Length: 69
Image (cartoon, rainbow, N blue to C red; front, side, top):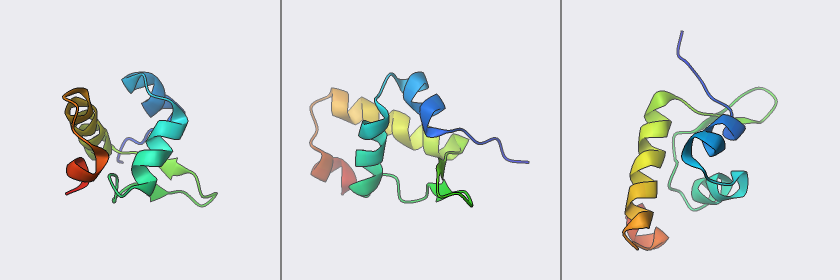
């Protein structure tokens, strides 16, 4: 069974707001995040690795559009 995380857990782990994670998803930075039957995002360890990369790139001052490409 694959371990999954809620958006709240991810936000707390990365010290991000839930709206920031939703924004990253909306901008296409998290293309593989699945949703459960209720429509809530469910994150896997692979998604967390991607978010870690996004956060690192953002911390260097890279723009979202550049991270996406």
